[in-house]
Amino acid sequence: MELLDKLKWRYAAKAMNGEKVPQEKVDRILEAARLAPTSSGLQPFEIIVVTNPEIKEKIKAVAWNQSVVTDCSHLLVFAAWDNYTEERINKMFDLTNEIRGFKNEGWENYRQQLLGIYPQRDPEVNFQHAARQAYIAFTEALTAAAFEKVDATPMEGFDPDAVDEILGLREKGLRSCVLLPIGYRNTEEDWLVNLVKVRRSKEDLVTVID
Image (tube, rainbow, N blue to C red; front, side, top):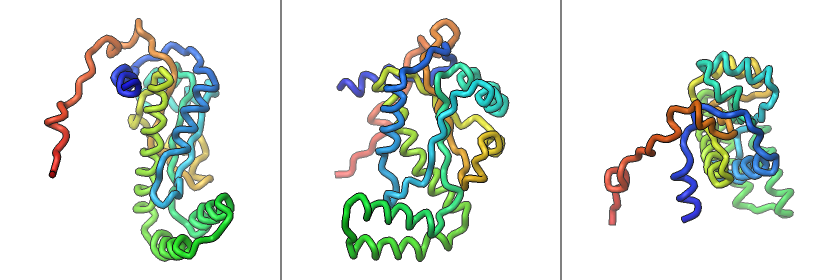
Protein backbone atom coordinates (compact mmCIF):
# COMPACT_ATOMS: atom_id res chain seq x y z
CA MET A 1 0.00 0.00 0.00
CA GLU A 2 2.86 2.38 0.78
CA LEU A 3 4.29 1.92 -2.71
CA LEU A 4 0.89 2.49 -4.33
CA ASP A 5 0.42 5.68 -2.31
CA LYS A 6 3.76 6.98 -3.58
CA LEU A 7 2.90 6.03 -7.15
CA LYS A 8 -0.31 8.02 -6.76
CA TRP A 9 1.81 10.94 -5.46
CA ARG A 10 4.19 10.93 -8.41
CA TYR A 11 3.57 12.66 -11.72
CA ALA A 12 5.73 13.89 -14.58
CA ALA A 13 6.96 17.17 -13.12
CA LYS A 14 7.04 19.93 -15.72
CA ALA A 15 9.17 22.28 -13.62
CA MET A 16 11.82 21.57 -11.00
CA ASN A 17 13.37 23.89 -8.41
CA GLY A 18 17.06 22.99 -8.75
CA GLU A 19 17.33 21.46 -5.27
CA LYS A 20 19.88 18.67 -5.08
CA VAL A 21 18.77 15.12 -4.42
CA PRO A 22 20.86 13.52 -1.64
CA GLN A 23 23.44 11.16 -3.10
CA GLU A 24 22.15 8.20 -1.10
CA LYS A 25 18.75 8.59 -2.77
CA VAL A 26 20.35 8.84 -6.21
CA ASP A 27 22.37 5.70 -5.45
CA ARG A 28 19.24 3.77 -4.48
CA ILE A 29 17.43 4.88 -7.64
CA LEU A 30 20.38 3.74 -9.77
CA GLU A 31 20.61 0.48 -7.84
CA ALA A 32 16.96 -0.23 -8.58
CA ALA A 33 17.70 0.23 -12.27
CA ARG A 34 20.75 -2.03 -11.99
CA LEU A 35 18.64 -4.77 -10.39
CA ALA A 36 16.00 -4.66 -13.13
CA PRO A 37 15.28 -7.86 -15.07
CA THR A 38 16.45 -7.96 -18.68
CA SER A 39 16.19 -10.49 -21.48
CA SER A 40 18.75 -13.28 -20.92
CA GLY A 41 20.25 -11.16 -18.15
CA LEU A 42 22.35 -9.26 -20.68
CA GLN A 43 21.67 -5.75 -19.32
CA PRO A 44 22.23 -4.26 -22.80
CA PHE A 45 22.37 -0.62 -21.76
CA GLU A 46 24.21 1.93 -19.68
CA ILE A 47 23.01 4.88 -17.58
CA ILE A 48 24.82 8.18 -17.94
CA VAL A 49 24.33 10.52 -14.98
CA VAL A 50 24.71 14.17 -15.99
CA THR A 51 25.13 16.92 -13.38
CA ASN A 52 27.43 19.22 -15.38
CA PRO A 53 25.44 22.46 -16.02
CA GLU A 54 27.03 23.10 -19.41
CA ILE A 55 26.24 19.61 -20.66
CA LYS A 56 22.67 19.89 -19.38
CA GLU A 57 22.30 23.20 -21.25
CA LYS A 58 23.44 21.53 -24.46
CA ILE A 59 20.96 18.69 -23.98
CA LYS A 60 18.16 21.14 -23.16
CA ALA A 61 18.72 22.81 -26.53
CA VAL A 62 18.00 19.51 -28.31
CA ALA A 63 15.15 18.56 -25.95
CA TRP A 64 12.60 21.16 -26.97
CA ASN A 65 14.11 23.56 -24.37
CA GLN A 66 12.33 21.75 -21.55
CA SER A 67 13.39 23.41 -18.30
CA VAL A 68 13.49 20.19 -16.27
CA VAL A 69 16.67 19.20 -18.14
CA THR A 70 18.62 22.05 -16.57
CA ASP A 71 16.60 22.55 -13.38
CA CYS A 72 16.76 18.92 -12.30
CA SER A 73 19.30 17.67 -9.79
CA HIS A 74 20.56 14.76 -11.92
CA LEU A 75 19.77 13.94 -15.53
CA LEU A 76 19.76 10.19 -16.15
CA VAL A 77 20.31 9.18 -19.76
CA PHE A 78 19.40 5.60 -20.57
CA ALA A 79 21.49 4.46 -23.53
CA ALA A 80 21.04 1.04 -25.12
CA TRP A 81 23.66 -1.04 -26.91
CA ASP A 82 23.70 -0.22 -30.60
CA ASN A 83 24.04 -3.94 -31.38
CA TYR A 84 24.53 -7.36 -29.83
CA THR A 85 28.02 -8.69 -30.47
CA GLU A 86 29.77 -11.92 -29.53
CA GLU A 87 32.04 -9.96 -27.20
CA ARG A 88 29.13 -8.36 -25.34
CA ILE A 89 27.19 -11.61 -25.01
CA ASN A 90 30.24 -13.56 -23.87
CA LYS A 91 31.15 -10.89 -21.32
CA MET A 92 27.81 -11.25 -19.55
CA PHE A 93 27.83 -15.05 -19.64
CA ASP A 94 31.40 -15.10 -18.34
CA LEU A 95 30.44 -12.69 -15.57
CA THR A 96 27.62 -14.99 -14.52
CA ASN A 97 29.99 -17.97 -14.37
CA GLU A 98 32.53 -15.96 -12.40
CA ILE A 99 30.04 -14.70 -9.81
CA ARG A 100 28.28 -18.04 -9.39
CA GLY A 101 31.56 -19.94 -9.29
CA PHE A 102 30.62 -22.74 -11.65
CA LYS A 103 29.65 -23.54 -15.24
CA ASN A 104 26.31 -25.05 -16.13
CA GLU A 105 25.86 -27.10 -19.29
CA GLY A 106 22.40 -25.75 -19.95
CA TRP A 107 23.63 -22.18 -19.46
CA GLU A 108 26.54 -22.74 -21.85
CA ASN A 109 24.19 -24.24 -24.43
CA TYR A 110 22.02 -21.16 -24.07
CA ARG A 111 25.08 -18.98 -24.64
CA GLN A 112 25.75 -20.75 -27.92
CA GLN A 113 22.12 -20.40 -28.90
CA LEU A 114 22.24 -16.61 -28.44
CA LEU A 115 25.60 -16.37 -30.21
CA GLY A 116 24.02 -18.18 -33.15
CA ILE A 117 21.12 -15.73 -33.37
CA TYR A 118 21.76 -12.23 -32.02
CA PRO A 119 25.00 -11.15 -33.76
CA GLN A 120 23.57 -12.21 -37.13
CA ARG A 121 20.48 -10.04 -36.87
CA ASP A 122 20.11 -6.57 -38.30
CA PRO A 123 21.75 -4.03 -35.93
CA GLU A 124 18.58 -1.92 -35.83
CA VAL A 125 16.55 -4.94 -34.72
CA ASN A 126 19.08 -5.56 -31.98
CA PHE A 127 19.09 -1.92 -30.87
CA GLN A 128 15.30 -1.87 -30.62
CA HIS A 129 15.41 -5.03 -28.52
CA ALA A 130 18.12 -3.56 -26.28
CA ALA A 131 16.16 -0.32 -25.94
CA ARG A 132 13.16 -2.25 -24.63
CA GLN A 133 15.39 -3.74 -21.95
CA ALA A 134 16.62 -0.26 -21.05
CA TYR A 135 13.00 0.80 -20.62
CA ILE A 136 12.48 -1.94 -18.04
CA ALA A 137 15.35 -0.51 -15.98
CA PHE A 138 14.04 3.00 -16.64
CA THR A 139 10.68 2.03 -15.14
CA GLU A 140 12.37 0.56 -12.08
CA ALA A 141 14.24 3.86 -11.61
CA LEU A 142 10.99 5.80 -12.02
CA THR A 143 9.30 3.68 -9.36
CA ALA A 144 12.30 3.91 -7.02
CA ALA A 145 12.30 7.69 -7.38
CA ALA A 146 8.65 7.79 -6.31
CA PHE A 147 9.47 5.58 -3.33
CA GLU A 148 12.22 8.05 -2.36
CA LYS A 149 9.76 10.97 -2.77
CA VAL A 150 11.95 12.29 -5.60
CA ASP A 151 10.29 13.73 -8.68
CA ALA A 152 11.17 12.17 -12.02
CA THR A 153 10.07 13.17 -15.50
CA PRO A 154 10.07 10.56 -18.30
CA MET A 155 11.27 12.20 -21.51
CA GLU A 156 11.27 10.98 -25.08
CA GLY A 157 11.00 14.53 -26.40
CA PHE A 158 14.59 15.00 -27.50
CA ASP A 159 16.86 14.46 -30.49
CA PRO A 160 18.63 11.14 -29.78
CA ASP A 161 21.29 11.67 -32.44
CA ALA A 162 22.17 15.06 -30.96
CA VAL A 163 22.32 13.69 -27.42
CA ASP A 164 24.51 10.84 -28.66
CA GLU A 165 26.89 13.39 -30.14
CA ILE A 166 26.94 15.58 -27.02
CA LEU A 167 27.76 12.61 -24.78
CA GLY A 168 29.97 10.73 -27.24
CA LEU A 169 27.74 7.67 -27.04
CA ARG A 170 28.17 6.27 -30.54
CA GLU A 171 31.92 5.87 -29.94
CA LYS A 172 30.99 3.62 -27.01
CA GLY A 173 28.54 1.56 -29.04
CA LEU A 174 25.54 3.18 -27.35
CA ARG A 175 22.44 5.06 -28.46
CA SER A 176 20.27 7.18 -26.17
CA CYS A 177 16.65 6.10 -25.90
CA VAL A 178 15.04 7.91 -22.95
CA LEU A 179 15.87 10.65 -20.44
CA LEU A 180 14.93 10.81 -16.76
CA PRO A 181 15.52 14.11 -14.99
CA ILE A 182 15.21 13.66 -11.22
CA GLY A 183 14.83 16.40 -8.64
CA TYR A 184 12.07 18.25 -6.82
CA ARG A 185 8.96 19.85 -8.24
CA ASN A 186 8.65 23.62 -8.48
CA THR A 187 5.17 24.07 -7.05
CA GLU A 188 4.96 27.70 -8.15
CA GLU A 189 5.93 27.15 -11.79
CA ASP A 190 4.49 23.71 -12.61
CA TRP A 191 1.03 23.95 -14.16
CA LEU A 192 0.50 20.22 -13.63
CA VAL A 193 1.27 20.06 -9.91
CA ASN A 194 -2.28 20.45 -8.54
CA LEU A 195 -4.18 18.60 -11.24
CA VAL A 196 -5.83 15.28 -10.45
CA LYS A 197 -4.05 12.22 -11.81
CA VAL A 198 -6.09 10.70 -14.63
CA ARG A 199 -5.84 7.00 -15.48
CA ARG A 200 -8.19 4.57 -17.19
CA SER A 201 -10.23 2.43 -14.83
CA LYS A 202 -9.07 -1.07 -13.98
CA GLU A 203 -12.12 -2.44 -15.83
CA ASP A 204 -11.17 -0.53 -18.95
CA LEU A 205 -7.50 -1.47 -18.73
CA VAL A 206 -7.39 -5.06 -17.50
CA THR A 207 -8.92 -8.11 -19.14
CA VAL A 208 -9.06 -11.27 -17.03
CA ILE A 209 -9.22 -14.62 -18.84
CA ASP A 210 -10.13 -17.40 -16.40
